[in-house]
Length: 359
Image (cartoon, rainbow, N blue to C red; front, side, top):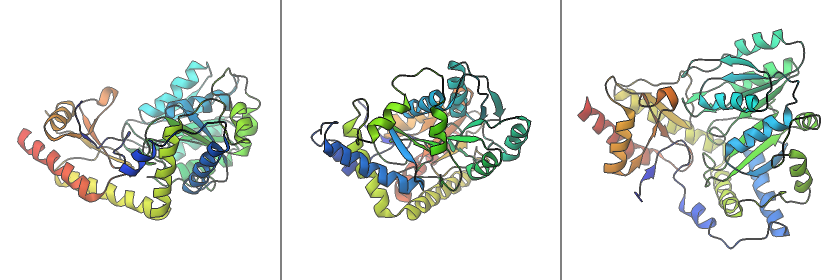
């Protein structure tokens, strides 16, 4: 296997002590030691998310928690709004379609963020409270949506705001309770600096009440089971215990840095990378960039697919390509979690050198 450094928007380059934590002897997931582990992780996450909500954990990628949100908060007669500005916003739509729920789609072009005033226009036409699905950080384009504004609008119309925060949590600020986010979805493998395998849902009491009225089918992702087992400090099914060990270590590292300082660190890294991209004479792709990743447009005649392959093979550095129609047209640079400006500078210097050679 090729040994390369990850500069991708998840999974990320992990701190060594987080990796070592995953090698601990297992505990039994029906033992009080597991309950303590889950309790510590929950307490740390509540601080990072600025919430007092219940947090439910799943052994899955982030998409699993997204599916859990759809299957539990929706009923067959609901007509949710799906606000899309990239591939992961489209995933909300795919999930709604799987459950045969009629949707109202609010869509922006790739690279654009969703305009809150457009969301309000759609809500005005609804004659009852609804569910709004959207993303905090759209990983496919690097766009950061104005979730605070979304929350104000959602509250005004007594609706439920469900946010995919998988790429943004820990890098892009999201004050869940103050911003009226009813369901916030996250995962272990991005700015939270742990290996892949755990996703979670921070859910408000009013959203939990709505889930009790849902008539959609679910088994593994039935939240009623997760709530019941949470009271005992357990999960209903065997969890990825080693990932949880790593997650505990990673979250404690964030708390040691300080939550506000950690967000500022990501802001500084994002500003640095985008400044360097502009110095290369290139254009930033998203109109409202996230601090979790930076995305640049490729110069005419140069494929990001070819460039990523060359840099990986020759310099052992791995960037990310565009997805879908953006493949070969944009290059995505992850800087969430275990990165610093020195590390980023070395990778960007190599990128700049290859660009000069190919122009």
